[in-house]
Image (cartoon, one colour):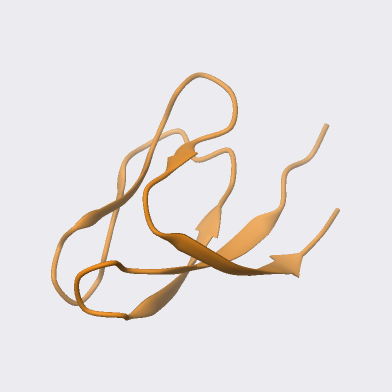
Length: 57
């Protein structure tokens, strides 16, 4: 039931940030503020490029 942590690259500034795949709140890029993930009720809609799975549970 647990989710994974993903390393996501921002499409605008190429900053890489760790995001929980079942995020319950919108996640913005720490550098430019672009939305990286939006909640959908289950797995979040990832809007950046997924680089890798950081921690699989």
